[in-house]
Image (cartoon, helix red, strand yellow):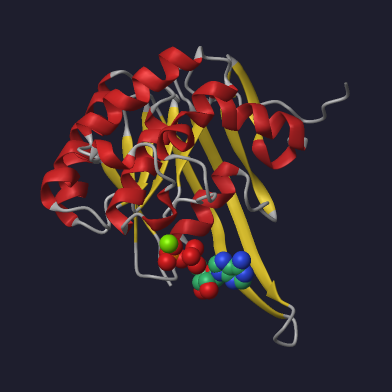
Length: 240
Ligand code: ADP
Ligand code: MG
């Protein structure tokens, strides 16, 4: 297989998990006379184990776009997203699709703002899916998810139902359990606690603190100033 330019910058710290360099991203609005909307104009970020960076800035300033570029949902126009994947450095901006899938399976977890629900698939299966895809024994995967559901106080009567009809906060907890069931070295969290009450927000904070102390690196968009103060080591601020 021919891989070009798969060399991270020489000055990268050996412990670093993620190194984002000079990312640019514009949207072309084809429906609106091809207007070009610049969103990211040279964003950089380096992330080490156990760190949590908050993306802050007004609505529409590019926080979610940045996160989607890191997960490979959006392809940046230029710049690089170096990820330490299974001891190798890969640049997500140059990665062929099948390798991107492997990075998402093993290295980067993503708690999107909204859970994608499939009718008829029960909450337990939705939350166990990523772990099962990794080849985990179904019994072990389900036990892990049940433990997370307990901790997140998701009522047991809901576990065998499809989340289609769940409330916002219930869906959000299924989404969090789904990502936390796997021990990803890097976690991206897009407003993971926005629909939760104070008690459940605190449980999520404790779970994320636990991941940090295990060496997981987090990037999060958190509306709640209290959450940012408690969990995050620093902020990356986006401007309009
Ligand atoms: P934030 O998460 O900070 O609220 P976003 O990253 O969602 O902001 O959006 C940044 C800007 O990019 C906004 O002006 C938004 O309208 C625009 N944008 C985001 N995604 C798209 C897209 N898929 N197509 C066109 N414009 C987009
Ligand atoms: Mg957003």
